[in-house]
Image (cartoon, rainbow, N blue to C red; front, side, top):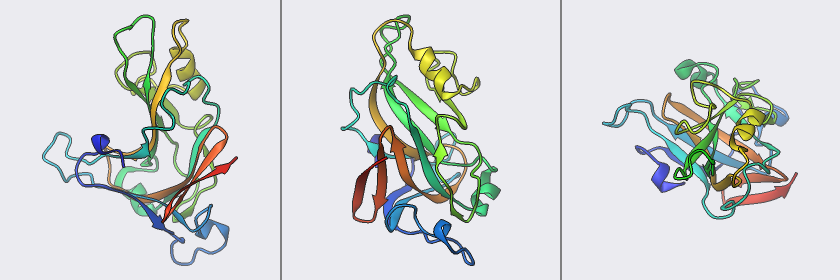
Length: 213
């Protein structure tokens, strides 16, 4: 869990399962890789801040540091979404993928921090594991800090966001990569099979295993 990106007392922990809701059998009833996943729990009204909701990021602050943003080609994950989560915040109440980056924009040379955020579409299934959800072709992306036209109010595709960062100057670089949730609606579920380019990150109770895509 990335401590500095945590608000409240959420949970982001490696766990066993989940193995589907009652009555769900077959491949979608169990984690897509191994026996475990990354369990995430955030509350919508549990802090004294404004807004009162929690936030959590579970990721890596070391291995992606300095990598090229423009070299990102494949990104996505599989999710265990529940009907309850849909009830809490709608069908698009889903976890996110976030990359903290140095945008390296020629027009803003002193600005060396932003976060690329992927907001998924609604999960294709509930109460079971989804198939792979491709962050490069579905949902939308935005940058925090209003560095480019890709803002939370002006949704961009993955390719549009990368193009907005490619302004002819120094190339944008990654600081960290994470799966996260908040700050908005309550969500209790799990993620597995995070893909970043040619690596798939298999979340297991005893650690994170790297698989080749």
